[in-house]
Length: 301
Image 1 (cartoon, rainbow, N blue to C red):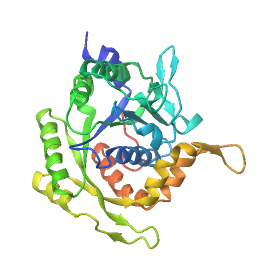
Image 2 (image 1 turned 180 degrees about the vertical axis):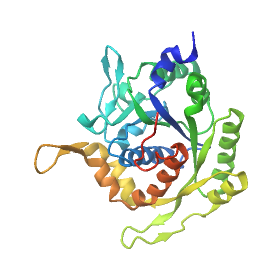
Image 3 (image 1 turned 180 degrees about the horizontal axis):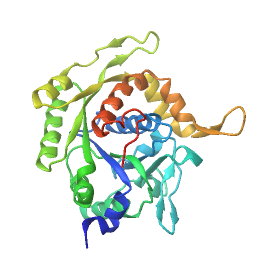
């Protein structure tokens, strides 16, 4: 059987670009970067179709950040239906093990083979449909989940790429180097590096203070020949938004009552983080799109 005729291969054929977000260590804000990337790609074009797959199986946080806690996965004749953060628009789909837990407080205590089976099921059974981008939030480090992903996604290797997230501290940069080494070992192209938690945004005046060190990510990117995608300071407005997302409705009616819009994206676009993330996503889209396709943010087939 040809690789693209396997269950995983058939699902991936309709996905134009797959972006794996990874980090060398935990606590660097990788999941919040993944959520921002999905939201920004969604906002990059009125027709962009985006999926976000959370394969941080023991610490799924994407449902909470997108305000989808408590949702379950629906089964259709064509497979699992993603949970759509934008409701009936169905342009921002999400899948996570968090949707499969009876209670969000339940722990996931699985050995490698079960994790591998879960990832294979996510890739083969989720009915994503046609997507411009699939963002994959991975666990920290380089573990079974990363190897399983790359093994099962071999049919789509030409459409795979990675974004590495780090913080400015030396210990995080050292672990980011290990993550970069992993991508080179498995021939996974790296779109670039994001330095997260690079300073602190004052909620009153908007001034950025360097609580930790800064510039380490940019220096690492320069030394390793990577694209430095940008720096993101700690933004209390963003933290509050993503933490409180479950208590806000994902969609609401506009004044004229005839259309529905994604409320979280409107709230996100009012944060300073959204403005800082826009050039980052522009660089990512520019790297992925072919000539003539950068304008509307969607990709040619």
